[in-house]
Length: 401
Image 1 (cartoon, helix red, strand yellow):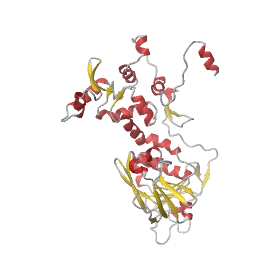
Image 2: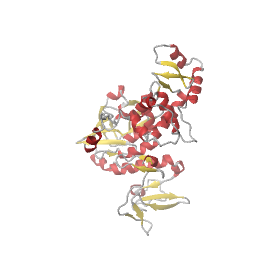
Image 3: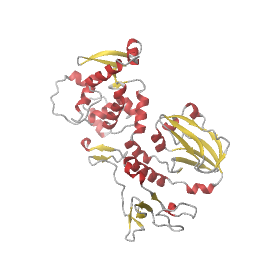
Image 4: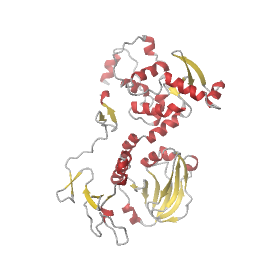
């Protein structure tokens, strides 16, 4: 309020704009300074057109990068799309009511859609990637609103949301989206318990890994299934995944709204995107499910495997997996009724093993036990030239400090 009173002495009209609507301003406020002389007039600066916005963005690109909306590049890609047999773009141009038209920008003929630069199919993924990175990984809605200031194509909002769900860096920060009142499985199902009734669905991390979900099928209604049996399938654009029973019980109800709106699983997996409700047969099985902290560790490990493919052959066993019965296949980390390592046991070449500890603990001199590290803080996921924002834990380039 004090600053507002001071500023009002200079006569500005102060208005509040919601953050979700204030997209371009956020981006422009972070632009690095440039020593290039500007010849634009005050009128041009106060009323930037789509063209000048694109030019401003072009100035931000490093020398070794290619800005996807560079006009010569866009013109070439548009021409390739026009020259295709039975070109849909050509059909749209011929239709005066379609919103497509040709416009002159910098003496070049550029196709626009709804008065914004039309982005050809071959440049869309790169455009989403460039802006998503430049704006420090916003959500799908905000990414689309920013793009609408410069360019457009049919389905841009949907594709923006899909791109954000596929972003590995964004998935890292979704680790924090693990509700504390739920139980979890290694297969990324989540369980909400209310008396003897359990509501089952998939986690936020799981829907992000699957991508755009187009169909959910559950044909086991009124059946009683054992733990880890398949109760249904979820189909995304590029994959189909089985759904496993986290505990034993009778399936009482299926979320029928998913038949017509499967995207609810993407939009709100912990509420509207639930899949089945079941009657619990054996309450003791709930104790075998993962706690929120254990599930976060599972996601951390999954991301490590995604970023380090050479780790796929690694075998690691926690305490419960180090104890095996005579019927189970033994391995170098099996100790029968005892555990080999206090925390984690890694199989190493030549039938050996090595004990390790989770983050926040260190291995003791005996090579078996672990001890917590006092005042330990999780390592940053940010790159060396980035810092972590304390309010939303996102990584931001140091040039924006």
